[in-house]
Length: 348
Ligand SMILES: [Zn+2]
Image (tube, rainbow, N blue to C red):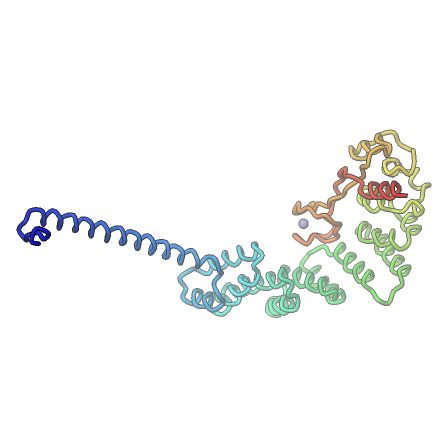
């Protein structure tokens, strides 16, 4: 029986203890390394999680009050939130800065808050902010300009027109904006008939010689005859998309035949045969195709001031707020309308 047990002094006992110790140490170091790895991963995960969600309003309040970051850093952060479209966060930062920030920057921060409210579509709040700035500093052109934009978006054209007087006193040319606001006021009037609107718009056009697109877009729609009678054919390129989509029955071919660009345009459209070529590439291709291919003109609208491209026509750029900065760009596109009518004919 004793042969199955080792003596304490037996050398084999020492060897076994040695291997047991190696096993225990290896086992513990393996588990320790595993535990450490898991701990590190959790720590990093927790650290990165902070950036998945934005700080809450209360967290922002504490961070701004602590004053660990300069006011300029907070303003830069708010600006980057605005650029990213997160208006809520930038509004929270500006509002908190107004409470605890430097009083010498109060008006600038208030203006930035008003601008952000305007961009976010909180027009009433933006209005109150700009009115507050103007109450203490009535000669602030930026606040006047933004208040005018707010009134324009609210369709309160009377209030917007009242701001032109202080703006003109600040040596700003208000001729175009005055014509623009008056035109919008007429277009949105509930009491005028379409013909009365067209007549009043033509009066504005004749006195200002501006806003061709805004005015003729409406008149070509409601009274094409009056549009052709008053339309300045030398500006046809500005209204090319309107002229292109005009119904054939509404066209005045006497006027068209007297203008080179209009002859090329309507030859390209296939309504007349009055041109063999054009200096405009897209029109030249369409004239030479002679309606043999399903191609038509496509239009894009570029703001000449800020170079933003829009798929639709505009009178005031929604990015830089400039009036009459739209330039139409032509392109050749597939004529889906023609495709559709051919498909329909094939089923008959
Ligand atoms: Zn622009």
